[in-house]
Structure formats: C-alpha cells, structure tokens
Image 1 (spheres, one colour):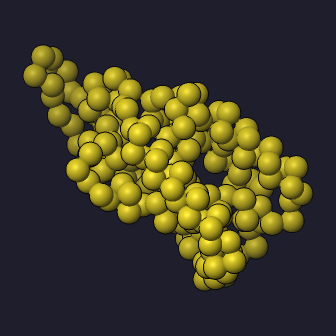
Image 2: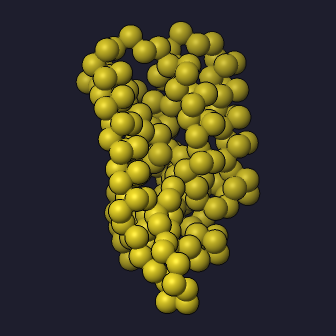
Length: 189
C-alpha cells in the first residue's frame, strides 16, 4: 500500500483540471471552507506533510527508466530530499482534494464517497508513479462534473490539445541513446 499515490493523483488532478479548479468561484468557495474549517485544513495539511515526508520511497522501475516523464518529475521535484518545493505543493494538493469532492455538485453523498473510495482503491496499491494509473479515476471524476462553462471547456480542450501535440513532438524529435545500446530511445508517458 502506497498512500503517497493520493498526493501524486492530486497533483495530476490539479494540472489536468486546472480550468475547473482555478475558477474565481471555486477558489472563493475553497477560501470560505478553509476559514470555516481551519482545524480540519490544518489536520489535512499535516497528513499530507507526513505522507510526503515518510512515504517517499521510489519504485525501482521509476529510477531505472529515464524515458518516462515521471522519472524526471521524481528526479527533479518529488524525490529530492533537500527540496522544499514538494512541501510547497501542499496547498495545491488541499485545493485539489477539496475540489475533487466539491466540484461534484448536485451528486449525492453516496456517489461522492464511492468515487473517492474507488479512486483510492485503484491508485493506492500501485507503488510505481505512472500517469496511466490515474486516468480511469480522473475520467470517471471528470465525466461527473457539471460542465456548463464554455470558457472552462475551451481552455481544457486547448490545454489537452497542446499537451498531446507536445507529447507527440517530444516522442518524434527528442531522442537519445543509452551507453549500452545503439538503439534510439524516445520519451514516453
């Protein structure tokens, strides 16, 4: 069981759903919630801090293959013991966690709990940080959002197109070779 996957999923959620999370309306609701439930927020921050501090053991495959984006994410940000940036992301994780539930407006409590439970059941057993483990949970969550903002939908669409174009470009044109083989290596998700 690798509880840090929750933190990594929240990071993934924050990046890929920023048009919905960073709306003025959502941020205002989060600040209001934070002020009302300050002690709950402190407790969640403490839990996230402990997760980042003590459940930070990388999977051997993560460190063995430098063709994946997660290798560099771990090497440069999440795995650096001397880096305080990973702790600086805790407010974004809290906002993402709160948004994960609150953006499921008009859904009953049972469905919200089931989505959260199924998300944890699908990601926590995985010790390897891989975006593909987060996609089913993200898609189910995203399909349950009420998408009545054409601005957010447009931003989300453009962002996803740009991510895909960048990924294809990097795959096709950014290559390298390992010292023990002559085969061309390519970056992949």
